[in-house]
Amino acid sequence: MPDPIGPASSEGPPGRPQRAPGTLRIGSIAGIDVLVTSSWFIVALLISLTFAPRIEDAEPGLGFWKYVAGFVFAVVLYLSVLLHEASHAVVAQRLGYGVNSITLHFLGGMTEIDGQSRRPRHEFWIAVVGPLTSIAVGAGAAALWFVVPDGLVRLALQGLAGANLIIGVLNLVPGLPLDGGRVLKAAVWGASGNQHRGSIVAGWGGRITALALLAWPLVMEPLTGQQPTVLDLVLVFILGLFLWTGATAAMAHARIRQRLPALVARPLARRTLTVPEDLPLAEAVRRAQEAQAGSIVTVAADGSPAGIVSEAAVTAMPAERRPWVAVSAVARRLEQGLTLPATVAGEDLILAISRRPAEEYLLVEADGTIYGVLSTADVDRAFRDNARR
Image (cartoon, rainbow, N blue to C red):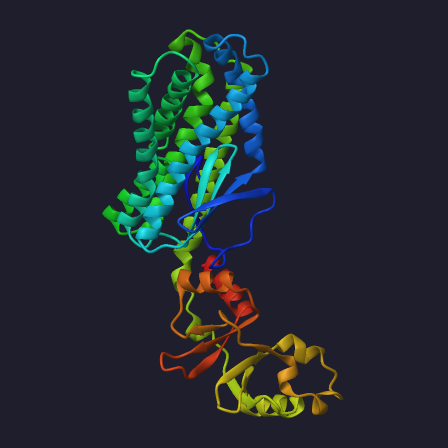
């Protein structure tokens, strides 16, 4: 669940995923792809235009170069955002999680971590390290500001210090999808033993934060003596909407995950008949019907599983052709990810299916013997039935 600057969990395929449309790879950190979205160039331009008058005051006569200096400041600012995200990624890797990518975007950054946290303390450390990194960068820039003479460098340090201190403090606000929301989630999870309760509590924290942010323009003038500008209103609306939708999505995902433990692969498996790869399809279907088997698995000459016969392919094959077609012609080869342990259940089952989408999966016991075939349609049906209860 992404936040303006913070980690996000992922249920995508393992290894190096395909880049999302509109992203550009600019390098890697610890083997993790660093991506930039097209929206980053828009915000970099806005920062350049906004910062240009202050640059002109600090260094008069720069002309067009003041905008170049503003763009350089935007790059430096987002390098500090990259440090924030890299800290999430490195800690996640140290704790044994895969990290797919780091993406810099309009609202900051996102670290895509493979899977959900397994323990409350993992959730805590992965989340809290980002804001602490930003605060450390901000404090370091502020310290240098006192020893650097007047000029562009001092101005950049001032902006870098202010931005990072604000980013660090705001990200500690206890509401999802902010880092502070994940810290709150870890605290509630650790105290109650229920991860999903932690997500729901932190989601409500995010909703309250969104409402408080949307109300800020109403109290800005009485508290600060300044009227909100159009830019203030736009930014408040964008950030408030982002927080509300992110918190709501996190709560919805938590409620879904509460139902996942009821999903167990073993009782959903179809009884399976094993046949040689070169057996005629008509004979394989006859044997399956005789054995009242709901699936057919082909085996190689050495007896090892080779493929799962596709029910859709069998149905599409005309009956008059089945005696002349080998059963292997309508079987999907057992590639990596299509063989699952018979004990797989809950979120592990959903993760396995989402990583390697297919219509059927072979379930095997710990000793490698075939237990049965799991159909995705049966899993979907069981999930819907659990949702109605």
